[in-house]
Amino acid sequence: MNKILSSTLLAGLAATSAQAAIVQVTSDITADATWSSSNEYILTDIIYVKGGATLTIEAGTIIRGEPSTGIGNYDPGALVITTAGRVNAQGTASDPIIFTTAALDSDSDGQVDGYDFFVDDNGTPLDLDDDADRVTATQTVVSDGVLQNGPFLDADPKNNPLPPAIYVGTGETDAIATFVDADGDTVPNEYRQLWGGVIILGEAPMNADVTSAGGLNRQFIEGLPEGDDSAFGGFNPNDNSGVFSYVSIRHGGAVIGSANEINGLTMGGVGFGTKIDHIDVYCNADDGYEWFGGTVNTKYLTSIFNNDDAFDIDSGFTGLGQFWFALMNADTVNGDKGGEHDGETGDGNDATLGTDFSIPKTYAVVYNATYIGNPNKATEPFRIRDNWGGEYHNSIFADFGGSDGIELESDGEARFTAGEVIFSGNTFYAADGSTTAADYGKAVTAGVETILDATFSSTFATTTMNFLANPSFPSMNRREVSVDASTGVNPVAPLAQATANNGLGGAFGVQETATFFDDVAYKGAFDTTAASTLWTTGWTALNIRGILVDRGDGLSL
Image (cartoon, rainbow, N blue to C red; front, side, top):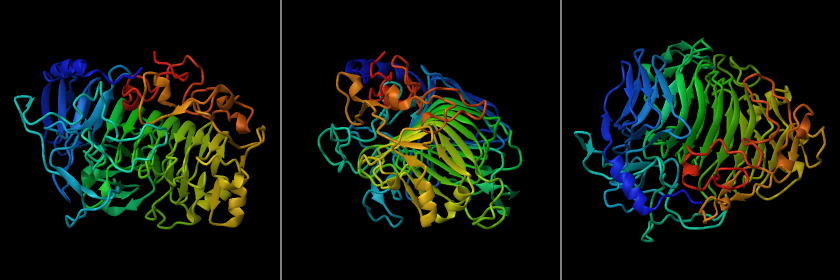
């Protein structure tokens, strides 16, 4: 059934939640602090956790970030865990920690107060695109723990999350040409870029040598003003930034300065000692996730309806990942690569690209990913460049509207030919339904493309590295949900397509290579057992909205 609650029940919930104290966070956290679930917190600016402090966030806590006050201002609400800080944020499936926007909607018309249009740095209106700044002048006013100029646009994020925008269309792949409000008037914005995001910084290795950031393996993180609080990287692969678990991050990606958006969750030099799992990034204006170096391992990550790439890897990242799920909107503007994977940025510690690699060499290993693209936009599952190396196994990549499956740019070919870019045991299927191997590999050098194409086959055999077949998801209706929730998004491939039969190799799956990975006998991010509850149930925005099903058989619990 649809889980969006009735207006009567919502009114009751709103009355209850109105009793929670509103706490504005206006300064950096320099001593141990705890944010209680009995309050709601507003980040009025970029808030840094530093000076040895640990920020503890209780399960069920709502944290809101304010939008920027104007063009070029460095002031959207954002949370940054510096290398000298730590976070202890442990939500649960029934009580997730939610980061969302503090944007206001005083007349309840679905549009943000003080938000006018996309503009360039001269104040000239622009067409919709992800590089434009937004004018959002109205900020919260709080007195004695009570919001004075509400309500919030995202009034009840626990029970009724915002959609990506107010849209038209009811089909699985209906393109959204315009966004309209409840009265049918054109809305010039989507519900994204309405605050900053979450950034975690550590002292694990990354491959840059920028002396202004403190020396070898140090860099300033993307999206923040340069300074001590934005520097990261070092020589401690076991660095511990804390715990970040069962956290939903929604509607972020505000621009800092001219055109430098913040990702949903950015990780710079985050170390192996950090625990990150069950994270939901929803409707962000930039990437869902981006790693800049580091060694942290992650499980159970979602990247849903984000504007740019789902999973972006850079600068010497060497962590492991399992159960990563990406779902792009089916409009004509949002979503780019499932994985945009770079090894270095050109300012690495050998100061060159080509065959002289920066150290550490990027090498990420991922099992059991499901990336579902935008069929109405020319995007691909992967773009590999800048000497990226790594592996994907036992995964499913489907419905991307571009012409390729894996795109190797010229500076991504060397490590592929050296056997350091490995895709095996995966299922690929393009939005156009092609099962021709030559349609799935793209490289600059013809000989390299021939080798890449040979890793794909529509022949189901133990020698097949990547199987070309329709994963036959039961439903991909991203727009509306009828009384029967099975008409929503069901990303669980039938057993016949998804079984891995671990140990046989090829299209039948690849045996996991590290104790971090769960030994599962299926492809993709979700268990294929019909009665199994999806790990996204109860805490992710799309599931709470009633669009992402509870179980692989499409039934609600």
